Image 1 (spheres, rainbow, N blue to C red):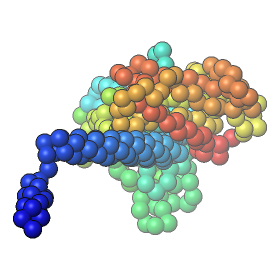
Image 2: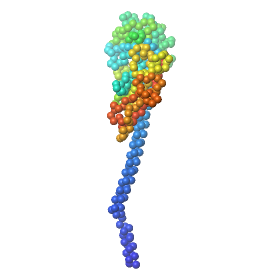
Image 3: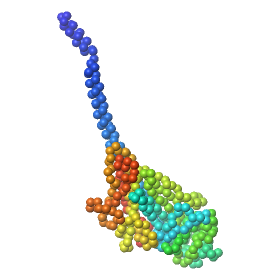
Image 4: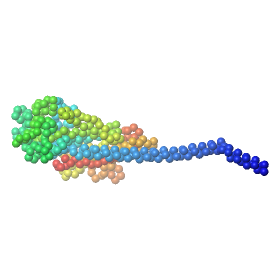
Length: 386
């Protein structure tokens, strides 16, 4: 009995003594390995989540950038596209009796400036900013003459809105004081910009201007003689926007007119982040069938050349915000433009034709993912006139 009681006590004492040092070390090791495995799974999962999320952000930014360019480009040529002889004319304007810095030099719907060595292009869009509608107004006799006192302050027109009176159906004035007006003779002559100073009225409507050296109406400006059959184009507040890519973002620079019509260029203003390249091409109808025959980025220099431009094709390259530890991009992305039409600068890529969109000028470019968004934008104001 004694030995049995002693044995029971020893077993109870051993049961109460806890883990040995070796057992504790083994337990800690198992815990560390388990923690390491769980952490590794979480890190991989979180990395995949960030990659997916950043890819979604790139898709959203690219789609929004394309949409913004489409909305801005669709009105290109509004107001003056209906007057073929105006397209491509040299723009002449004076504010405070001086040329306006940065003001466009030609009246064209879209100007593409190609980036050097694959750098992003810039796209400039011109259109009338008239809220109601803008129709060309035909100048009638005796016309405008800056050297004749009776004819230097107004442009007599057949009608003031293209129908039978100076007011629109909604009651608002189609030509209002402050509207910027373009006087057009033809593409081989300068198009001169002045500001309307009164609401047209009377049996023979007249678009009035008054000498004001501090505004758009410098003394004796416009300087040319405008006679029967020439035109006025109502540009309203004059839409002039330039889209470009800088500092990995899509930016826009816009012409702004203050309350007193003082012009200034606002920008560049960032629109969307992580846009790293922008490429554009003119779609040209070279045979007069209102269909695009060729795509290129050669800017026309003549009226006939500009009248061939009926569409613009653009590509936007969006970059994910997530920096990947491994190199996930090994070459510049390719813009597949198809093989149906002639596209300047393409190379064969399988059964199609492609253009290379440069991103390898960016820091650590191989550690980011890229997505191309492209579309064709018809210039409806040019097509409707064709």
